[in-house]
Length: 80
Image (cartoon, rainbow, N blue to C red):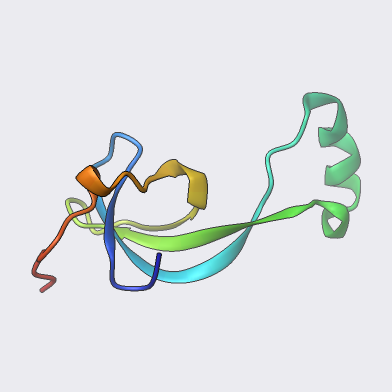
């Protein structure tokens, strides 16, 4: 995966990868309060800043939420 590539994000349609980012990792419910007390202790995952092509929204998402199946990667998408 690299910036400029376009992937399906969840059920929200195509999204262009803008840059890699760090994003808070999912946590178990019993750990949530501890992490809120010390946000620096919250584990980080690798993610991507994306822009949804349909709505223009930009957000940070977990990498595993991007559909990396080759049949879903959009090829030759013109970005205006």
